[in-house]
Image (cartoon, rainbow, N blue to C red; front, side):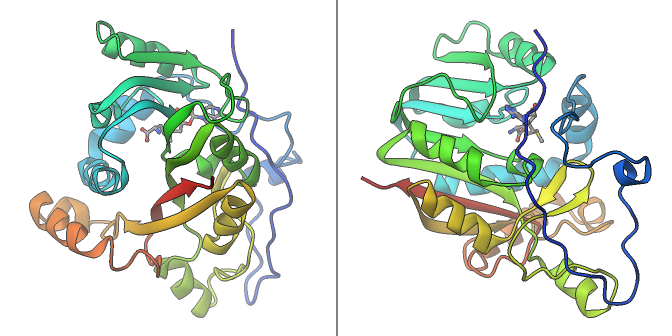
Length: 278
Ligand SMILES: C[S@@+](CC[C@H](N)C(=O)[O-])C[C@H]1O[C@@H](n2cnc3c(N)ncnc32)[C@H](O)[C@@H]1O
């Protein structure tokens, strides 16, 4: 069975360019509709994401874990990670009795099954993030990291995450942040047509979307999810820096800064903990 990644590509707002015209996306240049549901969001049809992408990103992996350890309730009965890929973060869920990892990529699901074989607490499922095969309020905790950037509209995925989380339960979410320092600087220098402060999401490369913190907050509110705390992650993800400076130095800075800068969201990645309303 091959599932297509059915993202929810609704309108993406862009303001007119200030100085330069925006270079058309590859899909537009080819005369294709970039937000058509005919096209998959991203393929993940091989293990390049595991074997190539993460091979050079120890800093980013460690930053994600700093945030998750700070936000995730350490214990619980049932946890689901949606868009779990090959199960990179599975070892963070030691305190849970039943853990479901769900993803729409067959190769990633197979890789996760292989890696977790023998641990009866884990169930690894092929499925769609927006149609989770569980009743309302089934999980104590839901986790969704590095997935929302494949959705032009965060609403449907957040509604589904809110639906399966029990009242009083927790969602730990990561999203790619549109209102970061780099995009603000580029806007000020006239190198970017869209404003980081506008609501709505922006497609920074085909099928990858940065989201507005205000837009995400509103979508969470509609899904019955109340944000408790936010953390700004991967703050020192600057070309060259993460390979030149020792990891321990980078992480010491990251640990100190993630929480205090959380509400300002200066970085490219935002982590948050939200509570499902009762
Ligand atoms: C960037 S990877 C992140 C994987 C994992 N969360 C991590 O942080 O290592 C994005 C994952 O989201 C999955 N994904 C994208 N759209 C999905 C959908 N509609 N339903 C389920 N999974 C989806 C992809 O297959 C991929 O494994």
